[in-house]
Image 1 (cartoon, rainbow, N blue to C red):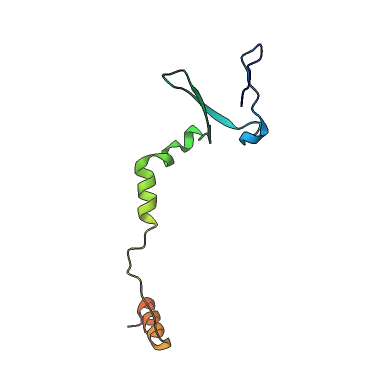
Image 2: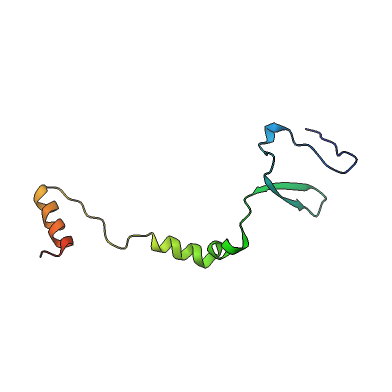
Length: 89
């Protein structure tokens, strides 16, 4: 697909590329002169703390349940487990 710049060096992207008005794009110029447009979701500065590697790892590990999985094969086993969870042992 060939597109041309206008007098102000602007280009119009066809609708088929999936970029909508108002979308944020990162522009990357490669060493060989090729230009890449990468759709991005901008993050407000006050929310950047949540996107650090450390924070993402902490969130991921907090969502992991350390308790082993249990297979319950009868109503009696289920009642025993429920009692244990309720502290009725």
